[in-house]
Structures are given as C-alpha cells and as structure tokens.
Image (cartoon, rainbow over all chains, first blue to last red; front, side):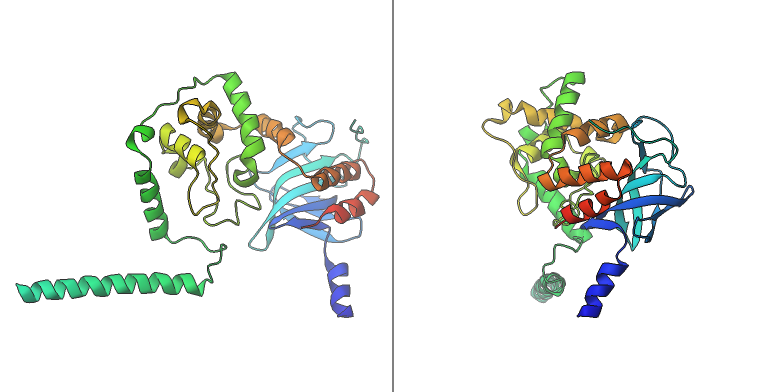
Length: 103
Length: 206
C-alpha cells in the first residue's frame, strides 16, 4: 500500500484531469510544429501534441501571433486521446520579459 | 400458397427474434454502459424517429428572428452560458459531460445537425430529446420563445466561429469557485510563481 501511494505521488506528472481533459503546467524544454515538451517545477517531463486546431495565447498579448519558445512558462489545456495528450490551448508567458500582472 | 405463406411468416418471426436477441446480447454485454457508441442502425432509427416525431408544420417553420450583429452577440452569450457545458463553445461536444453522456453530444458543426431545418433545430431546443442528455429548454408558447430561435441562428454560425468569438464565450462560461481559484493559480504560475502549481493541484478535485 505504501509502495502504491509512493508510486502514485512520485510518478504523476504536472497534469490535472477532468475526465480526458487535462492541464499541463511547466517550462518549455522543446517545441516544434507537432509537439511541445514541458518540464514541471517538480522535474517531470510531459509531451503534448500540437495540431492545426491548437490555439496559442501569450500572457499580456492574447491577440498576438507569437509562439512559445524554449524557456517560456506554459499552462496547456489538453485532451487525452488514445494515450496521447493533444493541446487545445497553450497559454504562455515569455521568459525574456516578465508578464504584466492581471488586475 | 399456404405453405409459402407459412414459410414466410416463420422466416419473419425468426428474423425478428434473431434481431431482438442480437440487440439484447449487445446491450447486456456492454452492461448498459454510457461509454459505448450507439450502433449505426440505432443512430439511423433514432434520427428517423426524431424526424417523424416533429410535427410537419413545426419542421417547416422559418426563423421569425432576423439575423444581425446584436442577435449574434446575444445568442453567443446565451450558448456559452447554457449550452457550452455539454456542447462546448465551438459546438464540437468535446466537454467532460458531452463526451460521456449516451448518446454523446453531437458535433453541431457537422452535416447531421446543419442539415436539419430551422424548425427542427428550434423544436429540439424547445422540447429536448427523450432518453438523451438534451433537456427541454422551452417554456410557454413556441411562438414567443425568441431566445431559442436566436440560438438556431447561432448554431448555423458555429462552423464559422472565429477565435475572437471563442474568447468572448470563454469570458461568459459559467465557472465554479474551484475553477475560478484554479484559473487564478494558473495565472500566478505564468507570472513566475512556482507555488501556484501546488495551489492549482490542491484546487483540482473531481
């Protein structure tokens, strides 16, 4: 039982689920046209697929056309499909300039 | 002649028993789970019955509300507040509820829905559909239910929905206190606060 508790708490990546919908929080370690790799503050790495329907929202510039870069913080709204996470919306803040706080 | 008739009746009875038996077997083996997809025959029959159940004069009714920017704005907010929980803002039906009811919420952008007449769409909104997750939203006389007619316009608009309109809908989607806390934690995380991760985790329950 202890082992099971340990396994569940220590191997779960930074994702929180509502059914098959999940949020992934972390820093981008790799990104290309088909997927983004995110490392959580606890050090877990999660791979999320990107497709044409994926929308990107930069904090402080939601209508901008920028894409997240390696080092940016992201909160990804994703759906689990056949064992893979598919990003619906990627919220990100650039590591280069601090995001303006929301009122 | 009599023998042929007898053979025909026996064949029909065997066919009916076989069909009912097969359907019962399939239903019982799934344990009546809502996770399964309905069979093509079931979908076809259900759609035909729904079509026939809508009175012809209702089916052929045209939308009494003229479409303009105000109607779009109003119906967009209405849909986001009342319908999106199951149908999703974009009408895809991909929400935790829409994907897990039986039958699953349809993708309203597709031909199966878009090919329905305005009168049929209105009827479904106003009266709901029995044995599905679709409730009856109409109250009183159908002629006075202008909000449902406005929703018909919005359903027609769904295939052309813009990113900006999706953002407007997100702003008016109903949220639980937990979802509000979770969004605040995500916001803090994006601003560089790592402790927000634990906060979001704490607020994320089922």
